[in-house]
Picture 1 (tube, rainbow, N blue to C red):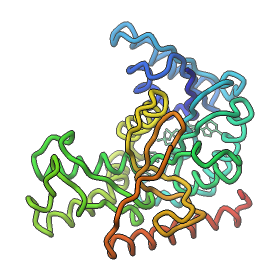
Picture 2: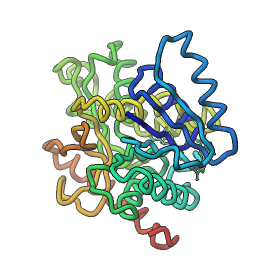
Picture 3: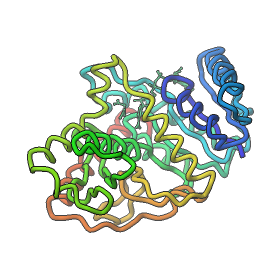
Picture 4: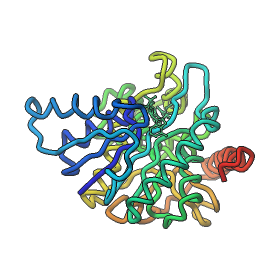
Length: 312
Ligand SMILES: NC(=O)C1=CN([C@@H]2O[C@H](COP(=O)(O)OP(=O)(O)OC[C@H]3O[C@@H](n4cnc5c(N)ncnc54)[C@H](O)[C@@H]3O)[C@@H](O)[C@H]2O)C=CC1
Ligand SMILES: O=C([O-])CC(=O)C(=O)O
């Protein structure tokens, strides 16, 4: 099977590295617009094969979409990342045109492709990819909730001194500093509600730290994060390629589910060879529903910007 990763920058190269190490696909194409950049990253990654022991092949190309032909899955990471003090939403003006043209090129060469969108503002870029490509909704997946949920588990594990693998916790809503909703009331430590162990203040602190997880790293590093984003993107691709039926939160097109329609927003879904196969119903409290609706309103406002900048 062939998988394409567009954008050989921090997140794209890390995604490809994770895919190759675990031999998720036999053939990986890494594509970037910068001359020679993807070729260099692919060669560097290939030179770890003798050390790590994998057989998967990775090839870097400069904007040559013919090489991506027949891809089963593509991950789009092309575009600019934010700098300290910026929001993800501020990237829309640059990234919308990049994402739109990348989607068009991918679909031209691989009409049956499943696309995972990573570029920010991710929910709006996912909506743009769906609307501009006309692909079936199940073949466009926004990656944000998988990462945010991993960060939520990290914060919980630090406070509980627990293994992250023993934690069950998800983040729904938008992939934004103020729009994501870590569902602390639903979080468990191997089936035991985390509220058993944490005070209300501790829970609020974990939720807040999770929401600004990306901004915190951007302030520390000077650009946005890539290790966990790359691992999360690769996990989504792996669930598609290996038909794993994993339950992740991802930004998918809602048609009445969770009370919202004509919007891409993070909800629990099953991911398998069909892309996002189905939405998993989840009962929300009144407070959680209010937050979800507020998140939808903020994302819808960003989606409306697509028309103002003539991207849709
Ligand atoms: N959804 C999520 O959870 C996350 C999203 N992101 C987003 O992912 C994007 C990439 O972040 P980084 O990898 O850190 O940035 P980066 O700057 O390291 O890499 C971006 C790459 O895209 C390439 N590129 C630009 N235009 C292109 C085009 N038209 N075709 C092909 N390649 C093109 C650039 O040459 C560059 O190599 C950003 O928008 C960032 O905000 C980052 C982390 C998590
Ligand atoms: O924070 C950012 O801008 C990049 C991103 O989406 C994340 O790491 O969650």
